[in-house]
Image 1 (cartoon, rainbow, N blue to C red):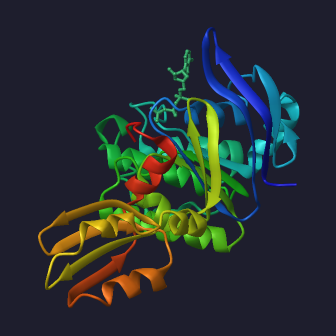
Image 2 (cartoon, rainbow, N blue to C red):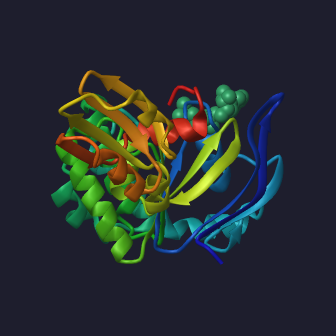
Length: 294
Ligand SMILES: Nc1ncnc2c1ncn2[C@@H]1O[C@H](COP(=O)(O)OP(=O)(O)OP(=O)(O)O)[C@@H](O)[C@H]1O
């Protein structure tokens, strides 16, 4: 049994099919990225998993509780941390009061430790907070009762790059302690840095589920080569060469083929500079999303 087992889950809003026949599992102790463009169905999935709305069809188990069993799900929530995409705060309350309230519901044994890392101005009214401060307050609330499973909807929105990196590092450490972490995102680089596996959703359907290494391998390498004389344009026909672009003696392409064949071809040239690196994740996404805007 996974930390989350989703089984043929669908959620319709009238004629709108927000989530359609989703099935996947999140394993215990992994960081699972739930990715998709705007309107793909990420928030709907998360809210349905947490019992905030009923599935139209299918079901899921979250830490063993069937989401259709509201009693079981409520009991299980003591072990879940949830960070919504736009947490609704009482703007007149201070950060400290907000945390006290949540502590009274579920505990706060890790509050001080978290506040060392994420330090919103607790004495001030939340209405005066910046977006990043609100986000940090939400992060402390999410983790302070030491949950087994954490579900976050776009958690890094509003965090500056240093806080984002601190947060990523924190997530990896939490995962190493055994916490299962699920977060939705459409920020591509974030996924590469922290997730073990990713599920891609589009138009309510799960398009693919991959571990991040496989995903990047499948995306091939970005090759940039500078040769003393221009490459023959027929290089574009070599197996595994995609998106071949050439400007005089510079060529760039994505390569998913056999390196020996590529090296044999380049051996006929005087290679001045060669760079083989990871392709932009945007390219990997395009592979799954076609022309969709991600
Ligand atoms: N309460 C609702 N009533 C009607 N339609 C809804 C409702 N909630 C979501 N939808 C629709 O369901 C679809 C999926 O929306 P959802 O918010 O789950 O997407 P998302 O992947 O989280 O998008 P984003 O990245 O923009 O937050 C969209 O077409 C949205 O308009």
